[in-house]
Amino acid sequence: MHQKVECPSCTSMKCFIKRHCSPDQLAVISENKTQTTYSKGDFIFREGYRMHGIHFTNMGGIKVVTTNSNGNEQVVRLLSDGNILGHRVLGNDKYYFNAIALMDSKVCFVETNVFQDICLNNPEFAYNLILFYALELRRTELRVKYLAQMSVREKVAEAFVYLNEVFGTNPKTKTLNLKLSRQEIADVAGTTPEQVTRQLKDFDDEKLIVRKKREIRLNIAGLEKIVLDFKIE
Image 1 (cartoon, rainbow, N blue to C red):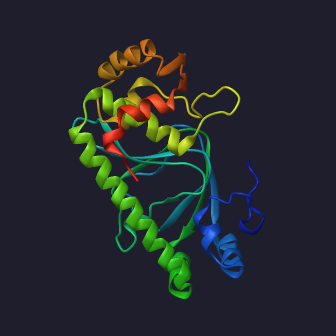
Image 2: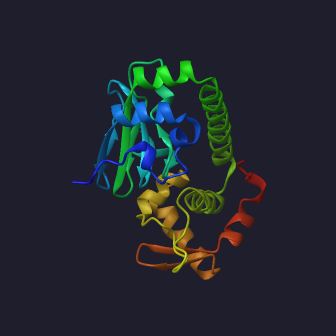
């Protein structure tokens, strides 16, 4: 059982709550929050479940996905340390997506009334939340637009660029800080495992990636060059 991390003593400076709340508000959140550890594959919440509050990651990695009629997943968003989760359903009753742990993760939860009180009594926090919404919406819209225009090669390259942006690489091994199956890569890229398999071989041959089982070293400069016309900012 992991010990609960209190907000005032938390060392994560990426956390949206930590960066934008006053010390008094941090103390309130810390007192009222719950903290849960999830293993890879665990659901943080499921599509259709009733929404009771806001989650934010203390550590780990989460994917937000939607499932089509055939049961195939499409990744909507990837999250690492400090990101808000479940905020899109504020003002609604139910979640629209599934949120699943990509690795062992620790997630904090604050009930809606506590979060809303922070927003109403801290204009700077509310304004920064608006900016966060606007940035996320713009990036999501661009990603959806570009995926419809990209070739398989570009989709897989963009998936690796996105994964690197969110999770980074190990400073010693230079490998991606996340081990993914081909199905999981396909879900991020918006394509099929078969297409990913063929594209990974091409990337291997071109020295754009180096694979050792599920560990992947990325040639980020080379991959970014492939998607230069589809820059997401």
